[in-house]
Image 1 (tube, rainbow, N blue to C red):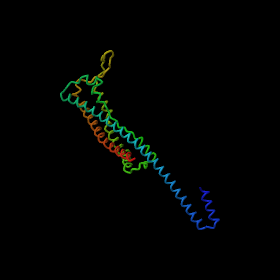
Image 2: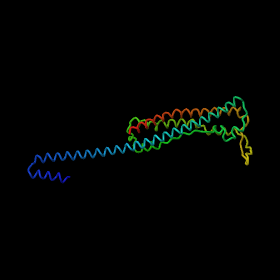
Image 3: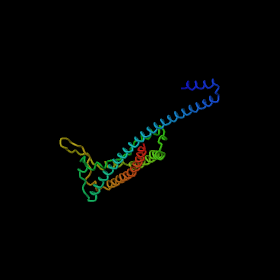
Image 4: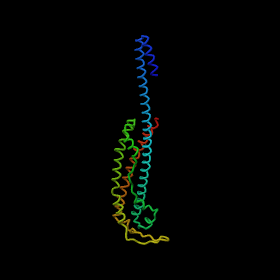
Length: 248
């Protein structure tokens, strides 16, 4: 193509058509510039297309991990409900001044086991950290980008601190619960023997035990409240990401 244009210019010069030569030369330069601009625009468009594909891929991964976080936190709420149901059962027996019987805790399916349940704050921030590493500005939606930053850098750490704080006494409470047990006794269980530290029959009238139940109840209620407060905020962010993904 270049040789073709050069031959035309040479012919114009040899024929003495200088004016036409310069006009043609200018036109040729303009065409070259236009060609360069088109090439640059195509490269830019291809780059934007790749960036958008990466953005959607990462947003999809963030959405997936947030949905799994919700499932995990709902499971934690269910654990607090199980603890609460056990405390309610024991509270009824305390009020009725019942005797504490072995079946309340020796049965592995007993609600007594729920009393020892703890809750733990865990979440997956891997996809968000990957976006941060590659450049958070790759999220083209300004509002969504700011909400992601706010959520992972401020909201999640805030609730983690709250929930971890409510559980800081868990180990001490479980040790206190164990302290009510008496000496080890041997119980025959079908074809084998179990060595059990039994709780006293007057456990339900022990003021220290009643105080412990109130502390466990407070811990689980606070934890449940924080999880129930957090989940709708996660769901809002999931919805925002879903709307952004649907645009394409």
